[in-house]
Length: 322
Image (cartoon, rainbow, N blue to C red; front, side, top):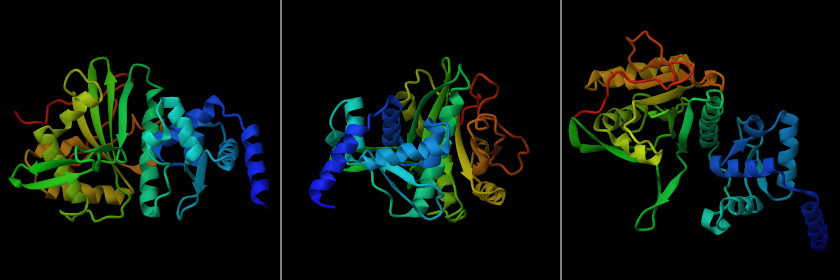
């Protein structure tokens, strides 16, 4: 096909495709989530898989989105293309240059599967909130949000560093997979999200999941999480702070509980501030009522994000020290 003919085809497509309000919402969601599988697009916007696939193909053909396949992912995965980024810029104000370049597919399909799993959880929480009129989602931040330092260097916004309370010269850094806040009236609860797909060591204190637990134990005790009060517009201290760990299997879950208890962190009640569940059990219908277990293997109780159909679970005691 000649270049003239290709230009004519592109022009014809541009004339044929009229973006609907739902299309614009889809493009805004792609900017927010960065990557969405067709199944996730369906969950968010369309009544059937066939309808979602057809609309994604049309938007891809017209240069609003790009799609690709990756090992282990049953659907195509979509991300913004240049024309889509321009639509997003026009919708929220500013220029495409201000928003950065269009997203590209990740090189590592393991990272992609982790990212999509984290997005599944975020979608479940967002949709669950619509079923609870008295509960509001004050915000949800994921690990790809960045900020520019005074020196002009980009850094992950969620990344924090905690000093080991037993050895203050030792610093433990970590970037959560997500952070969100729920509110009921003036009562607000903060949740950190960790998606564990079983691809890293559990017991390695420097690079594995044990390091993640070390970070949270120290971070929660010294109150590092209070920075999110301003971020999410909370006027009083969070009544509850929990770390939600989503694991790949029950066996993996129990291994994490064993390692967490083996760290012998003081105060011991820190174990109760980490909750675990299997990733496959989480849906929009179940996420708030799902029975989570604490990190303490001797604790036989189960817990829910919402203690009833109205208000976020309230902690009986604060973890931060005076």
